[in-house]
Length: 191
Image 1 (cartoon, rainbow, N blue to C red):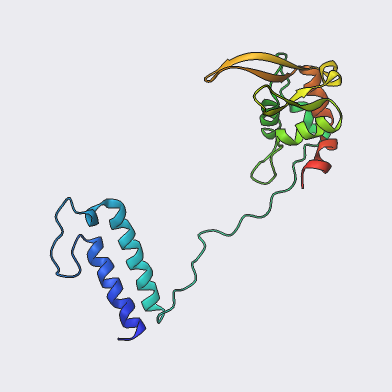
Image 2: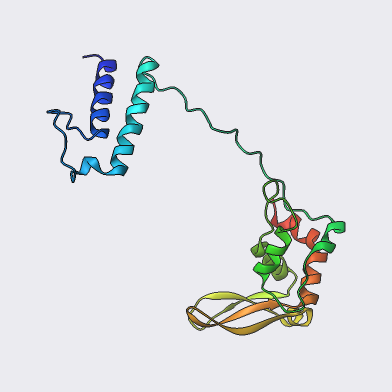
């Protein structure tokens, strides 16, 4: 038996299995039989179709055709100075992730990388406004330094699904400082 004949036989078995037929004795499998499960049946039809393609191509599977061309690489995050005025500042202090969401809402994130809140935090650490501190449970977290507190970064107690926790929030002056200095964040954190 040639390799192509083996592939043709395998295709026949897959078609029978996909249709709920025992390929050995050609009997219809009982309704509760495992080969009648929808997911397996779909898999059998898929394998049968792949084998059909191989047979039609003389025993070699043709290269898959991509349904769409690959996406071009995204540009680094950038928000021109004239567009920064559209940032939705909050009178109430907000989290760094909320600041990131609001910045990303101002750009086309399909064509541009998102502004990561972790990049902003890393930048604030380099400025000495945030620092890593050890928690009682041994984990580490970022907290504002004296300079960060003066800039408008604070810590508040909140309660979530898992109980109380501390959240770092940014008042409007800290929000403005971040938005006005986006260019300083990008070169070191976005590639």
